[in-house]
Amino acid sequence: MEIILRSTILYFFLWAVARGVGKRELSEMTAFELILLVTMGDLIQQGATQEDMSLTGAALAVGTLAMWIVGFAYLSWRFRRLRPVLEGVPVVVIHRGQPLDEVMAIERLTLDELCEEARNQGITDLADVEIGVVEPDGKFSFLKRSGDTDQQGSKDKHAG
Amino acid sequence: MANEGGRRSIPTEPASTEIPRQLRARAVRRIFVAALGLFLALGALGFYGVRTTTSSATGRGYELEVRYASVSRPGLATPWSFEVRRQGGFPDGLTVAVTSSYFDAFDENGLGPAPVEETTDGERTIWRFGPSVGDVLAVSFDARIEPGVQLTRLKGQVEVLDGATGRPAVTVAFRTWVMP
Image 1 (cartoon, helix red, strand yellow):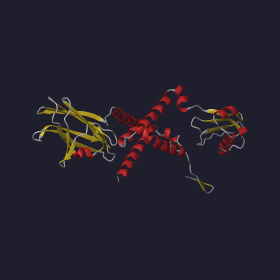
Image 2 (cartoon, each protein chain N blue to C red; image 1 turned 45 degrees about the horizontal axis):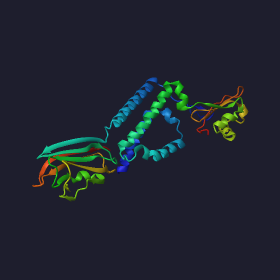
Image 3 (cartoon, chains in turn cyan, blue; image 1 turned 90 degrees about the vertical axis):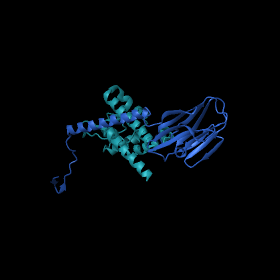
Image 4 (spheres, chains in turn orange, purple; image 1 turned 90 degrees about the horizontal axis):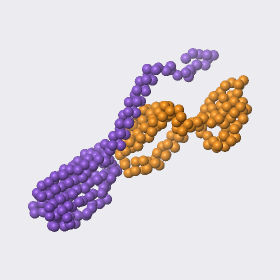
């Protein structure tokens, strides 16, 4: 019963945090990332709360992380120059139908992965792509060359 | 929803954005973030423990000072110690009684210095310390509050017992609020 009560309290606290932080931050999280986050949370729990076994301690730890998320989102919105540091920059990996090998190597992106992303968005030939971009959140955007139907899409897969 | 060639049309267009509704949502988020900030600030200031307090009393030549946590949390090391001062020291040793139930809430690592004798009368644990050098006897209890103890106000008291009569010469009461 005690575990149920504690879990219930923590659930509602996390729910309040999730609602309070805003959906834009949460929308960038895939199911895998959520699992990774929970797993990492379990692994770093000892480091964060040490021997504190209280609900208050758990709420302080979660609340602190939430405040950092809100803080970073605000800084990124308020100060444009900080955005590349806080969120990263979009990287062009295809230009006028040609994959940019050097850029792809830096991003640890293989041609197979690029083709897979393009296929997922209905592109049959990379030559049809005017610009292919890996967005800061790891999603891919493809802009088709003029004369073709414009297409822009994304998929929840991270490069590298 | 309209029928087009026998197929039901299901528009995916979201409802139009209502600015007042968005403003209200933003206000609620800001209130939440402010409340969260306040909660964290209080935590940073130690409001939720561990907060240490000192209480003292004098009587019959003894001066008793108890240092304890007024607020603590489960699993945390929680200070508890006392000092007894007496002009002329304690050539015959010193007997101190403490509330047993208070210490039931702790996972103890030890009492230092260790008493030469420990007994109980049911409600109190009675420690008898041997003769010590100097006018001050300082005793500390190294312990953590048990994880299962929470949302509780622990009450206790320390009594220095008169060597001749065995009655309390000086008493200090203390309370510890255990946060959830």
